[in-house]
Image (tube, rainbow, N blue to C red; front, top):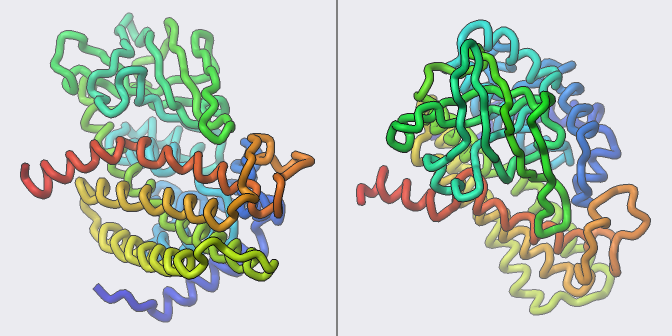
Length: 395
């Protein structure tokens, strides 16, 4: 594989950089580099700016309203966007249910939902994990009973990211309670605004509210909201998880956090404060920069292959989550005493107080706490190691 940039790729990178300089709102950029919390309107505003340019779905083929970009272009766009301070593109519609609809949805579902994802008319959330059914997803108990032309759904989902903003949920449900594990599961689309849907917040370690528990009590979904065939949802779930895990590698996020880490170290040294064991800190920064570049090369290899990423997505998920956690740890180490104590209100841009030390240090501990979750969501790293052992090593 040729890893040098071509003339066309360099020109494309400059095009992306120019767009970001002219269109990325300054307040969103400031929030990103201060690790401030983004609200629904922030995400929607950025998505619509991209959609106006025709870049609303970077990984989609043109036939579905996407850019038709090749893997290298998508990687350049992700890296440059994160480096510039742009909000992440919400994965639930673009990278999860969107690809599932393209592959397994019927034409009516594609025609209705896909354009609405690009235009942010529908905000999606993922109904997979349940209390007691996280890593062992096939043991889920949320039940969907067929009554006439609709399903009646009862159960509970948890760790549902941004469900408090969502209009729709793509949900795994058990449609055949007599079947063995995976064989009785279906994927159904659920309107989150209907009676019977209750969303309750879960506060995470950093004190923010991003995840939720969702209660489904006699919730209705018409039969046309079934994806593919009944009791075949496990196939669609695995396909979706492959896309999710590849995205969790977070190469763009790693590049941005590496830039923040370097800036943080430079400002700490310039202020006259000495870093504890500064030579070791510098070595750690150099080492993790090399590891980020190695992850980028690994991601390029996977992205260049048009086939299902399979267990390779598990490798990317593990390595990406490890690097994101290490970057957060190093930021807190460099910030030193300025990162403590910590209060959740510092995550919000309208807060009057940003911490005991320099403002850029205030959220370091919040990032450290928050990044611990990357080893869990999308399937724990322990589960991913099991997949690798079974499908690659053969044990």
